Image (cartoon, rainbow, N blue to C red; front, side, top):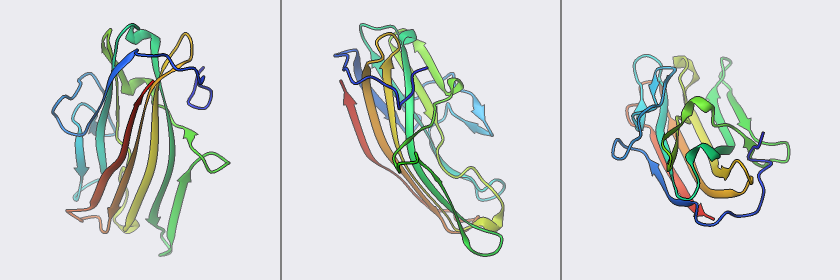
Length: 190
């Protein structure tokens, strides 16, 4: 199994012709599942102030391919994430996901969140962020840096990479306008 930590370093020129990061319905791909009440076919920012209190983006990333069938391309994601919530004793509780050296760790994507709608397209949908909890855990913060690689399954060569950062700050469970940002988007085709 090839993961983001075991990819080769040999580039495979010109097999990815475009990378699209989608955060609205325009250009969205269909065929993704609904996971934990979140429809991955509908990109955009979600902020529930009534039941689950989730706050997250649904985003899709598409890689347009040439000279290689989509069945021979796989995706690997690395992430460094820190989330903070209020603990029951009133203290801040922090959860961090990273490799032991402080760098990124492998984090999917799961096969159910990857679609190949044609022989020249592979896409992933993701919903990073706060997936809900009780009213007493606010305020919450979420910061994650992602690297998503498209690679050739045969040669293990990296074809393309997209990096991005998600930041969320939600002060109370009923905060109707939390701070939510997608930034640091860098697309690289090799």
